Image (cartoon, rainbow, N blue to C red; front, top):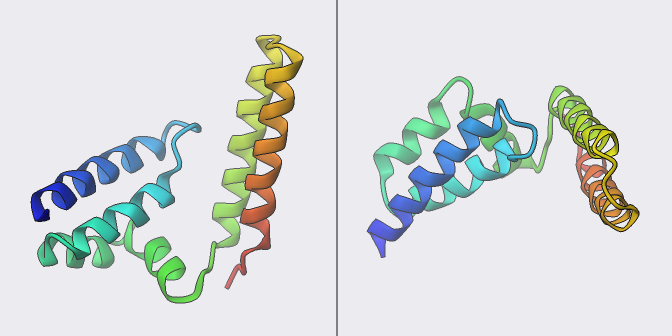
Length: 117
């Protein structure tokens, strides 16, 4: 089971890093899942993640206080707006746009309902 958690943790860490550059992949949720997996498979990788200057702060903020920083909220909102704008530019069907609008609205509501500090 340890190797399964380790493999999943590495995948989530990698996809989270890619998500920092692609608006469709959620960076911090993937890093949270990676931290969860590493906590069950590798103390060394778990410790490295939590002490990493880029990865550690948002993971610790969420783990310790359920906080999403204001800058991350603004970046998530901008990314969601860009993705929805691209969907509009490609003139996707109204059903797809409607589903996307509802899902993205719930995501934004969740993000903005979390404390910022």
